[in-house]
Image (cartoon, rainbow, N blue to C red):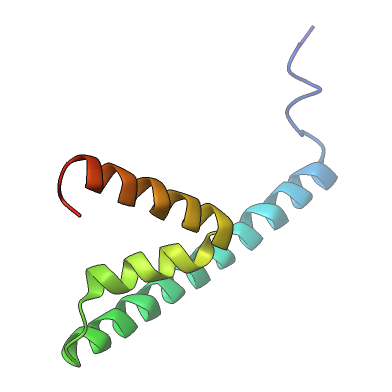
Length: 87
């Protein structure tokens, strides 16, 4: 008796469904690659206009985060910098 019969789709309906899922994922991966390329282009354009892309990336990451969480982290950072005589 095959113990894997439940886990592995063998009938054509499940196989078709599996193929459809794989193809959808592949299409989205292609779109994602395209979008990543577009983002790189925007950073390159910003750099060409004199902006520091490392700082831009940091700002984008900060804007994704919760404001209160960010304020708390900045307060702790400020405290640590003061303790080290860097502030």
